[in-house]
Amino acid sequence: MNLFSKKSNPDDENRLRLQKLVDQTKKIETPTGWEKETFAIGGLSNVGFSKKFPEMLLVVSSQGRGVIDCSKFELIERDYDDSWEWMDMYELWTMGIGKLSDEKILVGGIHGGGLPFLNKYGDSIQFMATQWPIIDLIFQPHCKSLYKENDAKDCFRIYHDYELKAYGFSYNGDYFITATSSEVNVYKK
Image (tube, rainbow, N blue to C red):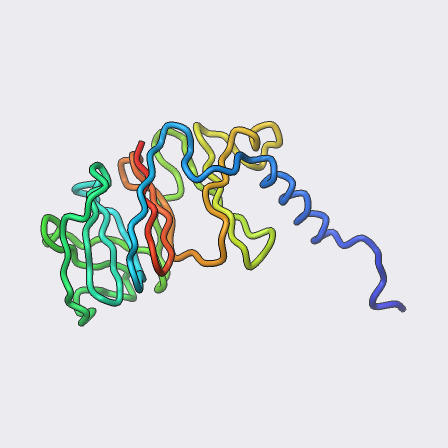
């Protein structure tokens, strides 16, 4: 019995098939109809959108919390409380600050959790890791699917890098983010 035979490996074949689909997407940082702004956030650990004010993004870092108004691409609140007493790492929420101070914000990041992967317009974000450890995020507009070979050309590869903390949509679907430990990319429709 030859353990190292060069026979076809079904897992490799499937990975290559999926990579071909990723390769058919448009390589562009900002999907058509969206705008993007990048904010440098050292030590970013978690992010979450407000349900009361869906344009507001709470960002948690090793230096405290901040609030970004995604409709204006503007940092509007900041605190430097690094006690972490305002976060429940088990239930994955963080108390907001400023305009969001009376709201528990569900977060995604280093402790788990997550943001919605689709919005009410039929847009979605698909995580792919066919070239691990490189991660691809595919923006799939208007109910398109990367997995439908004819749709892949209408999708956008918006992220291609080694590290990702969180990604997803706001609760009204007009905004989405990608976040690493050093920055957050904010997109608005």
